[in-house]
Amino acid sequence: MRIDDVYKSYGDERVLHGVSLEIGRGDVEVLVGPSGSGKSTLLRCLNRLTEVDEGHIFLGDVEVTGDTDPDEIRQQIGMVFQDINLFAHLTARKNVMLGLQKVRGMGEAEARDRADAELARVGLGDQADSYPAQLSGGQKQRVGIARALAMDPKVMLFDEPTSALDPELSNEVLAVMRELVDDGMTMVVVTHEMRFARGAASSISFLEGGEIVERGPPDRMFDDPRHERTKRFFESIS
Ligand code: ADP
Ligand code: MG
Image (cartoon, rainbow, N blue to C red; front, top):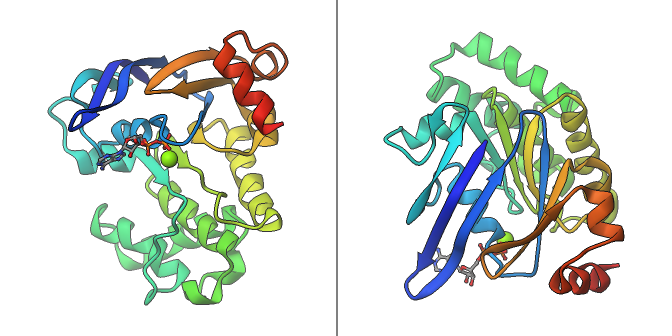
């Protein structure tokens, strides 16, 4: 996917200030940076949860920011948030089936099979009949991942998917994400999990003040950050 000179403001506050980024198929871009640097806003622009003020975003030949149906874009670009947003009155299976039936128009039996396959893929084959309240935070996040994957997305966006979880539960979610990486999924990931970033990223972008201050391969960014701000950031988290 290609992000070309994107600007976004909220009122007088400039949140994204000329962001450009090219993410190849199967690549994993990890976005890091201080709170308020625009990471979530950038992700939201990528799947049209937020409209850009200026600039263009492309997924292959399709302009995400163009005259396209946002719902169509959101099927192709799945997103997993920090806050788990499952329907409490539906089982894990039904949560995954919902989009397949409502958006894809899939029949019940087919949607059920697909949901069960995606739940198995995230290690929840035996939890399909559980309600969200019966699941741990890590399991809920994995249902959220299964729900996004069921739509056959070309790209997956993750916005701090483990920030609300204990380390042990974080690890199950990170393991699922690592499998997606190994399967060749194109991913854009905002995370504070530096071990994941180092091991899984094709490239790390450091954002501050709505700009990409520095970008590079993970080993280089960790071992030899060049920009003063990037140095300070990596020192503060290590
Ligand atoms: P990050 O994810 O890096 O912490 P965000 O993209 O969430 O940063 O936010 C960047 C800035 O934009 C913050 O100052 C935030 O307050 C502001 N912001 C984000 N979303 C909105 C919104 N819907 N309305 C007004 N301001 C917003
Ligand atoms: Mg954020």
